[in-house]
Image 1 (cartoon, rainbow, N blue to C red):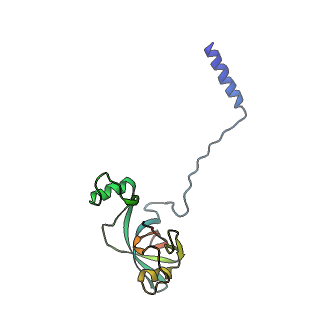
Image 2: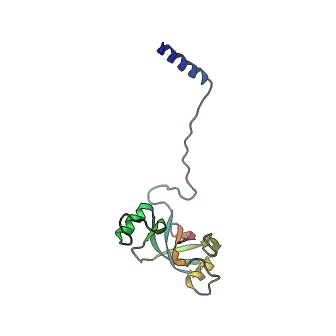
Image 3: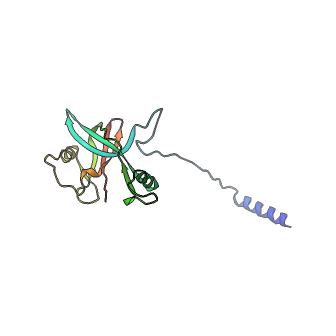
Length: 172
């Protein structure tokens, strides 16, 4: 009897699904400019670090950048404990820890139309031009005061050797 009930139930389910077609489509979506093609590293990467200089050179700007690692979560906790900044098992303040083991500066070009945000009046970024950022970095005739100093660091988006975006990091 149980087998007969099971057969009736399966037949009923099969009949209910007659004429219905289900098609599953899987798509891989890559954010613009982040896709990797061919051998080698991707052409566009994001890095954290410190802008040490930004000067006009001919028709473009050259930036010297000190890269660092901004770590979060348990990775930050372990690294800070290894460096003796906190006791093992303790959390880092604000869930972030910056590791900057070298002072080597890398030279990048900055695109004249680079998207640049600085912390001018709070934690919301304010768009500025490359020229305005160059004046802020050089401390020569800065166009305005900042909410946070530039020493909080920047996230940069680099395409090969040219910076396309710079966003100042807020550090409470």
